[in-house]
Image (cartoon, rainbow, N blue to C red; front, side, top):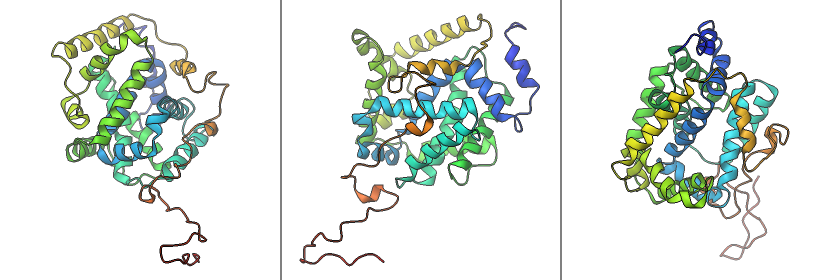
Length: 316
């Protein structure tokens, strides 16, 4: 890597990965690897759908069936707010309120929340180790861990491991214990694949469906019930990504945030002027969603007759 191309690495080397983790993570995600970070976080979310308790809730709400593009854009934009502005900035706090309101409506286990958080740390690291124009430095890895640990604290997620290696062990153990096939995994996986394919011309979509399967590892394929891609597809997909990395390595360092590319999102055109973080987020749970999915069961109409002919006693 040329000295000129090392501009941002030199800046990172001047910073402390614990104290300055927000600045380091912002450089990594928005200046050094914006495209890679967006792709790897898509894969991170895709990976979480291999956990049946996660996919079952997503399937029950119907949001991935009815509004997959909006759910994708909401997630991408809210995470961009935290990364680009900082989790304690005005927009960052507003984004966290939206995230917490959405999750707070549902009965989601702390371990599932913790697992999703772990994928945001380690999936980009794994992606960049394989397909990045350079590998992340140790400081960038620690900063990513510290960043999402602080985000997790502000989301009320408990028991985040205290160090980088401990959180990685949790992620691997959780996948080993929970990844298994379920019909809801498959449905949410199929909705997600079709969403990704919808971004490209129709004639390319059959090939893209195969290419996506070529990027999934065996535990994911098994959990989704997807057939493996033909044997030649993964090497070809990996070679294409490495070829892209070789080209990017020759480019000058980025001088503006790569998150400006989110202006092309399909749900809220005109970023950053077209929305506030409080405009994002899923609607309230559907009326027919069973109460066991909700963090607080709905209050029922006390005037509605029961099978015995009398309404229930009012709650006190």
